[in-house]
Image: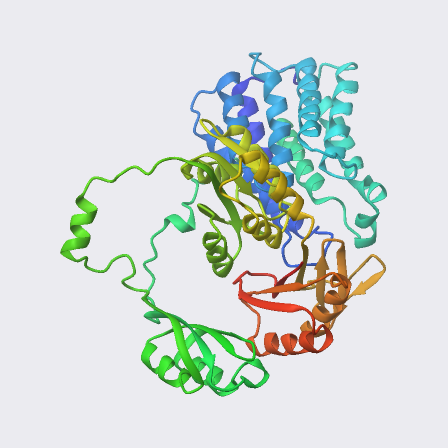
Amino acid sequence: MAINSIDAAQLSKTFLAGARYLENQKDHINELNVFPVPDGDTGTNMTATIMSAAQAVSAIKDPDMKTLSKAISSGSLRGARGNSGVILSQLFRGFTKVIKTVDTIDAKTLAEGFEKATQTAYRAVMQPKEGTILTVAKAASDAATEAAGQTDDLLEIGQKIVDAATAALESTPDLLPVLKEAGVVDSGGSGLLEVLKGGFDYLSGKDIDITIAAEAPDEEQIEEEEEVKYEYSVSFSLRAFESFAAGVDSDLASYLNGIGTDVKLAADSKRMDISLLTNAPGKALNHAVKLGSAYNISITNVKLDGKADKSPVEKAEEAAPAQAEPEKEIGFVAVSCGDGLDSIFRELGADVVIKGGQTMNPSTDDILKAAEKVNARNVFILPNNKNIVLAASQAAELLKDKKAIVLPAKTIPQGITALVNFIPDQSVEENEERMKEELANVKTGEITYSIRDTSIDGREIKAGDYMGLTDDGIKAVNPSIRGAFMEMLGEMVTDDSSLLTIYTGADSNAGETAEIQSRIQKEYPSLEVDVQNGGQNVYYYIVSVE
């Protein structure tokens, strides 16, 4: 059997088959993470990207090449998540630029489409690196061009494309030593290969379920109807009557855990910050004030928050016509990864905070919609994660009626530093220049754990070990969190360091945090230490050294 051309209806099904192949291998691709941390998300990001396009393609009842191309290109561009997802969307964008001008795809058009796809993807990356998805794309493009000069049979060409992409993927460890040391192939290239294999298998006559499930609503858009076990969210601070022993009072921690959940305590010698969910806020406060004077008290009814009966005054205020606020000169969108960090970004002036970070990269469309909400002529976008920078840049290109500036903040501390250094009275250009300069003055460290045995940079790492990751890679491996933290800090602190900020994660332990503080004060007495509730997942601590 030979196929010399395919029409829009066939291409639509071919694309959906590729999407299903990628989706089926999502978890395997996630596991190809070089670093053995529990945040491998390449498969998730690429699947979300292609499924955004697949939803749009499935909605077309009678496609032609023009409408199909628009669905693939626009759907993947807006749904792109993570660097690999953005590159995948750029591959589709380049390919559809060629095919949208024809009624059917023949060998020549296919080769031109692959070539344009590769060119577009390479241009989208500031510093293209071989041994990645780009290498696999280039091999597929070269194979398509060569095969199209030898035959008109698209199946024969498709087989050569898949074979070349497979060989290129297997070669990625030879191009990137870090892949070889970790014993994996490139995850982005692996995802692209699945798309190519799915499309080829469908054209070859393999029975593939190309049904695309309806898009699930965003979790944040679903109003929670689950029963709330604890009715009140309580937070307050204590100023100590006497120094807190070891930073945290164990009796208080035990008591609060007995009357509630999600208890968080962080303290230095004179101040303790406390938060919890409970049905007895009075008991929590009464027990705590035995140790000090309470202030910054906040008690929210979780069940009624936003739903409680409103007073006549509140109802009148809501009925009154809203007065449009004047448009600001400069606004901010920040990507954050924890409730505490969300609050910090808002307090520092972020107009819109997007939930994101490791394992949950926001899409280009998420960032675009956030920027559109900002009532400002110029919007600074803070990705705060190296895997979100490309999606932010893509969103900036799509934004209309206002200017978007992507500050290349690759970590949470860098994003916070940028906002701290914003001066409202200065121009967009002056602020951009200064904030970019300040990004280089902050060092970032993160404490997490290993999910598998591996070897990286000559370090033997066992599953369950705690790791300290800095801007320069893994700098600490230790069987204890405290050991990994202090080992990592030794690589970050210099004689010029003056401020250390610790953002505690959702799974960090208050007692352990206090012990770490105590060790820091002994080993680095000149260092000012500030502990903030970050609430992030995956990382027990995010650390900033300035």
